[in-house]
Length: 549
Image 1 (tube, one colour):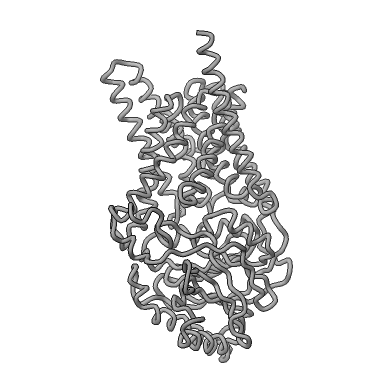
Image 2: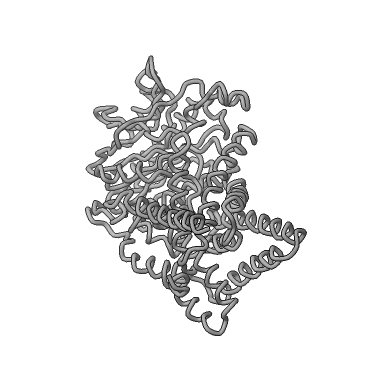
């Protein structure tokens, strides 16, 4: 593949050209200095390695800074470009080490909320494990960086690594995908075409292409600068702009007035569970207040209401007082309400369950959360993990996963349940939409994580899911940021943290499936095959070179 095709493998974010050129020239200059030092004596080679290591960690921090609550999504391609400068032409072992350092710089600040209430050990363990997996991406990118058109292969390797992290170990951890930092970005429409894998690919391709454009322009400024800049900007951004018509906010099946309740919790941290009855009362009382507001004409009457995950950690099927509190609130509002509860059968695991509660019939249907959070809702290798942290015993009884997607008929609308952690997983959301959801509800509980950035990161995921499947998304949260999101990813309204509130909004109902919904995992599989093809070419070349030698 020619150098012009190579540069076409990336594109730049929509920002002034001067800032884009300055950023990529800085990246190219720093990495060129490292390459020059590496060509000198041992002392300078060591200095070059230290410089590269520092730049890799800085690239990770830069990527973290591109994530919400900051509106700096455009930093992501430059973070990838800086990483590219560190990895291009390196050996596999160096690529792994640099990728690991990049992962630490990225994930240490991004996931610091996991230490809230339990100390640094779980946070550091999770970050180290995920950074090691990102190290594999660094290894793969270093290997394919000598191929013609390497930005294409490198971006595919990045997506393959994200696919691995979403599945292993312990069922995977999808937090921190490139896609999830792009809710306000120019690349977002790609999610409607090929889901989060294609969106991540577009951002990565842009970053790798920007670095390659700057590198070649530095060597051949008169001949290539203008052409490379034009090509780099046109590929990913051009594809995203072409996909823009898929991002719509209009109704197809009419509209419905929906409401989400944020009851708040007595206090943050794990101990909020010790106040389970107070949490339940908070949500019931806020629903009663909403009923009064409707009766007084201050707000429109909703067709349905959604409470958060864990809004009733008391099992209403075994505790009559909890049943009575919920039933009174539902009868007062007079419409179906989805209740987040924990069910405790006599035997077997606990169930994180959404209950459809009718004002006349009472509880009529349930949905059990399918993606159970390891080390949060279940403890793998409990006896071993206890050696490092006694906090595992806070989870005395593991939760078990459900099997089927849950779509509730609420006021004549199909409301699909995607409980909290599940929003990070492509298949959980997609299967719910394909089961008939006209609206996605993401009932969540992040009281454990206090006032950290976790709630904003999760809200950004929900916005990406809205665009990906062209559905309104309702986000009721116990104490974080609850929101109503339109199918185009825009936020209609949202609450403040640790504030009792209710959001009532008219939302569009949609049933058409986007290409991303119809294609499912196929774009991800295709990109994984591209990555495998690139690595296969590298392996073939090495075997042929050894035989020739």
